[in-house]
Length: 137
Figure 1 (cartoon, one colour):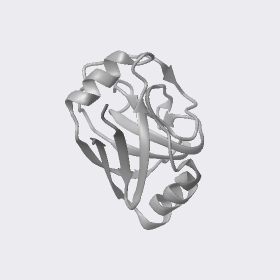
Figure 2: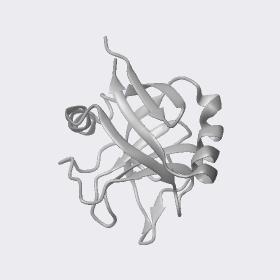
Figure 3: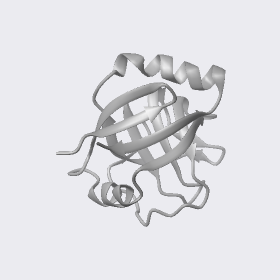
Figure 4: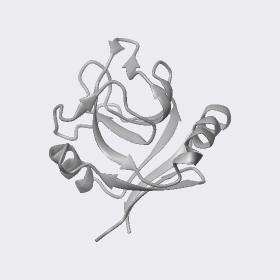
């Protein structure tokens, strides 16, 4: 079985897809892998980093959606009210945009190095955008 890795700058996390809870989102994201972007610190949501994706369309709607992802949860906002984005919570998050509260599909959960999440978040906050890569190995 392949292992999912999530790299944010110098940090690497093992992760798992939430295939039972978000099968359409997982399938759409797998088609785009390896997926690369940049993470910047959230503006309205609290302690998280996000990857703004503009009008990128993964072709999915809402499933397993939440406005309050837990630390280590990765959500995909499929677009609509705000731009498409991926968000990684590193501590308390209330997912929102300048338009107000949003909900995203929880489709990946980090499974290792969770103790490094606050350091990763602070690195993005204080040092700026960090390269992100999702890959199967």
